[in-house]
Length: 240
Ligand SMILES: Nc1ncnc2c1ncn2[C@@H]1O[C@H](COP(=O)(O)OP(=O)(O)OP(=O)(O)O)[C@@H](O)[C@H]1O
Image 1 (cartoon, rainbow, N blue to C red):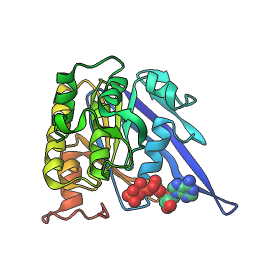
Image 2: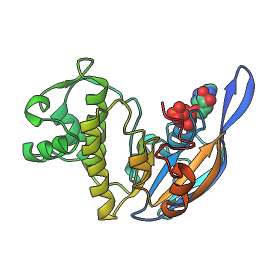
Image 3: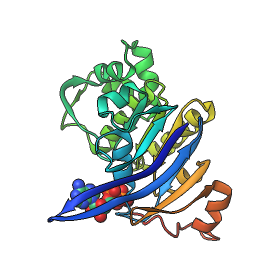
C-alpha cells in the first residue's frame, strides 16, 4: 500500500511562500488505480513530483509498502520501486531506443521484447529501435517512448502525469488498452493524472485536487456521476 500522510509542498514566489500542495493525505491499495484530476494549476503535477522525489516535501510522509521513502532522492525511490512518466519527457542524445528500453528494464532486452513494448504504445519497432532519443523525435513519440520505459519492468508504484498529452487519438486508444492491461494484472499501484474522461473512468478511485487540496475523493461509482453528470463533459477537469 502507498500511504501519503499530510503532505505539504511550498514554493517561493517572489519572496512569498506559497503552499501548492497542502496537507494532502490518501492511500493507494495494491493493484489499485487512482486517477487524480482537477482544474489546471490545482497542484496535481507538483504532488506527482513530490511523490517520485523530484521535489522534496516540506511536511508529511510517504510510505510505500511499509517503507518510509519521504527522505529518499529520485534514484533511491526508483530503487524502492517507484516508476514514472512525465507530461514532458526528457531526451537523451546518443542513446538509442533499444538501449533506453533495456536500461529501463534493468536487463538486456531481446529485440522481440522491445518490439512488444513499442507496439504496446503504438510505435513500430522497425522504425524506432535504432533511433536516437534526440530532438528528431516528436513530442508524441517521446511521450509514448517514456510510457514504454515505465512498462518495461514492474514497479510497486507507477505515476503517469497526463499520459494523454500530445498523443494522437489512435495512439491514445492503444495507451488506454495498455493501462487496462496493467490494471487487470493488479500487481502495481497506479496513479494517473488526467483530464481525459476515458482515463478517469478506468479508475478504481478518483481524487479531485484544487488549490493544492483534495476537493473530493471516492470510488468511480461515487465520483463519475458528480464529475460528468448526464453530459460527457467533466465538470472540473479543466481540459486543455
Ligand atoms: N516551482 C514552482 N514555483 C512557483 N510556482 C510553481 C512551481 N511549480 C508549480 N507552481 C505553481 O503551482 C501551481 C500548481 O501547479 P501544477 O503544475 O502542480 O498544477 P497542475 O494541477 O498539475 O496543473 P495542470 O492541470 O495545468 O497540469 C500552479 O499555479 C503553478 O504555476
